[in-house]
Length: 554
Image: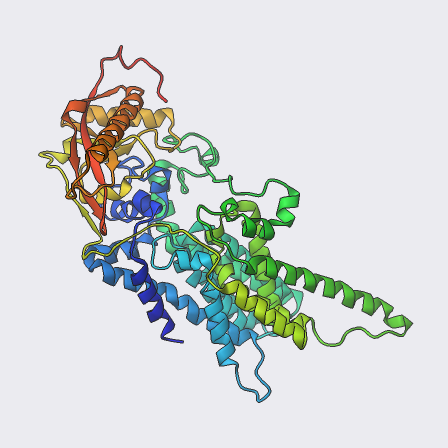
């Protein structure tokens, strides 16, 4: 069991240096900004994600900035591999002992392994997206709840375990807000455990208060900072409620992944299994999801059957004996069901399902043992084995070959960085990852990048331009070709055309902000993520005359 995290670290090494889109955008910039006084000094270099809570990213930032890149990648994989230990422990709480009364250690390990073969979990092994890391909080909170004495029989049992579980679940939700649905699902799951209604309500209430305390521990400092600087603790999200002046008064959300009808909602596990692009940029296909959905429907049908048997008892028929599920299994099923329904209606982004993906084989096995016997159980075991094999997904969030340093950026010289300013004008490819390697007092601003700009945002940009007497630049990402390798004539011409097109597009956007660009003075500089080369371009910009800038801002 304890070798599994080390194996996960080795798997992270085999996959290579993390090079995903979100890392380029904000996972590196956000902790740098927090530690170097850049909150409010820059304006959205990582687009609107610049204002996500950076606490989770402090870990990766510290590792890659102070350790060799392969060591940092191995340690990230080890941390993600700890989910295996939690899954094995949860299995021990749910699986009954064998005929000799011994725990089923081997089965627990196999089901934990099956959970860790899920496509979303494997795709994020060792990377910075955070779903694997915060899954530790979700699984840890669930384990604490499964270990509480059931049925609830004393006030102490309704306080201690929910308190600890709530703190952990809230801590994970504060680190990444997409985990809030798991905290809510765990709270509601407490209402189905055996015990009096008074004790169950008390347990749920204590859990809810502990969740709030956990959120305060991991993100309270960030919410307060956002409130102080921008007038919105979730800036720029929910700005229609908080009205922070630097962002437009509208909500921000990615609703393009949601089901389009009630029919799709009812069939969603089948739809996104056959068409994974409905819930992910990658082909993350998990056949176990529709199988688990069918198992839950079969359980519902069995509940109805038992109800009909109970109604017919007065006519001489006997109701089925024995409980439908153990208290622990009932809690797990309720948690997964509620969490799935919230995910279905709020996100429908598959990688946010990592905790449920990890638990899916265990729940499927528990339901199969309850619903089948003999040959049926053998068939269910075969289906489970075939469903969890990592054969059905493809694609990667992005990796590069390892180098000793995770990042290497050649930076131009700034004589007075506090008097200079750099703007970016495109959101894709993102460029926030470059900012930590420039002088700390150099200001960065993203224009027209997807951030919901307000008139006050435009006024702040104008003020920053006026306050700084030094040179200003626009930074453009132009080429991925390693600059030290020779090019053919055709490749050289294609690179020149891409650079010219990027410059023209930048000039068009900058004109809307009253800025012009000196294209003849552009200079190229190399940067690397692992072995992957990213050439970026620095071009001087200037304030246009008021007549030339009369056009409306974009």
